[in-house]
Every structure is written in structure tokens, then in C-alpha cells.
Image (cartoon, helix red, strand yellow):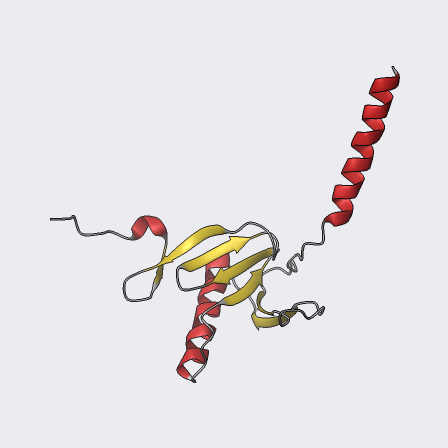
Length: 134
């Protein structure tokens, strides 16, 4: 009896400690609103800023397209940042040279969503066809 009580108390304390360590940033959940996320500089303790980029976006892919438009506009004006972060209805959107990734938190896992084609456009990974090797 005593061992199981000690094990139960240890389990409760461990769960509480893990819950206290979770400081993951979550995206706002505003229906149809696409955000551009301004991240603080390295070493800065500020929170990320969520700036409205577009409203009335029907899907997360539409928000990713708005973010890609923004990225290309900045690059055409002489910018050099290829990595963009956005948010849509509780999920983060990450754009980089490889494509688009989605994640539930800013610091957590990311899931591949859209790939870049040979000419730089975005497409769902299953639609990209490669010529057979000869």
C-alpha cells in the first residue's frame, strides 16, 4: 500500500512539473483572420506580435498564399528574409525555401503542407510530378 501511495504522489508531482514547463506560444483563433507574426529578435524577452494581414480567408491555404504574396513583395523591394511566420485560426504557418509548414505552437512540431515547384510556386506535395529517370 505504501509503495503505491508514493508512486501516485510522484506521478502527480511529475505531471504538475511538466505542466508548469509548458510555455509554448499559441496562435489566436479568430475566425477567417490571417496574421503575419513578427518574432522578437534573438535574446529579446518580448512576445511575438500578431498583425492582421487579411480577413475573410476561407482556408489555411488561402492565408499561406497571402503570406507568400507578402514575402515576394518584401523580396522585390530588396528584402532578404525568406522565412515568414503567420497564423490562422489557432495554427501557425511557416514559409521557407522548401515550402509551407503548419504547427499548433510556435515552438513545437511542424507538419509539411505545401512544396515549392521548380519555378518557386507552391503546390500540394502529391501534385508534383517528376519526369522519369532515363
